[in-house]
Length: 277
Ligand SMILES: N[C@@H]1[C@@H](O)[C@H](O)[C@@H](COP(=O)(O)O)O[C@@H]1O
Image 1: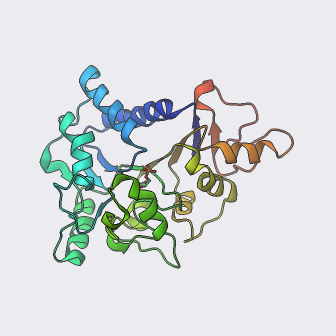
Image 2: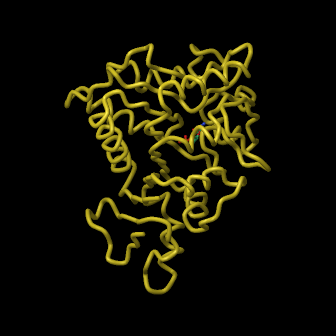
């Protein structure tokens, strides 16, 4: 796992978009896994800018979104369909037939989920998966619990997630209580993963993820520690607890981060104390 500590949200968004752009240039028919929430918004804006100003070509890119609320239709402004079209798809030259998002109104959910995974497999799996993280460690809508499911499935949202996501809705009652999400297996099979976290409200979960070096179903994102190509990009606010804990280790080294390398992106150089494994 590589860790990049970006200066702020704009820096984080630029860095994430550059990684995605470089993968598209290497493989124009990239299979791109996409996330929603507020964190990737800046990344989408940057990608749109790269399309407009630098001709980044999405015409052969295939996308699969991580998740969708269950019980709301795609024209509902709170749906992830709506979000993706408004914030990204309608601004670039992606082909509608190359866009895949779980259907929140699917009648036979089980069959729909199965088909979603089959479709991903048909394209040879996801090349690059973009991820945000919930304050409770959820990725997609894989919530902490006693077990985590591997395949795409219908899931119940935890109270913590319902509360966190209620900021996008008029009232708590309107927040869907269920969602369709890719499973941990689908996510972890992506060839490359980029996880983004921004802001103080992600500091605790990021410290837990980066400092503990342990895998637990209580923190679904911890399974990313097992993946060989994960880049975590966080801004200084989200790194707040992680950095200070590490710096308090005495010699100023980021010694707890043993599984990969830490890179202070905005300083434009590796710190002498950084670990590379
Ligand atoms: N299902 C999405 C996740 O994929 C996302 O990572 C999370 C964090 O959202 P935000 O970036 O707004 O903090 O929100 C939702 O629950």
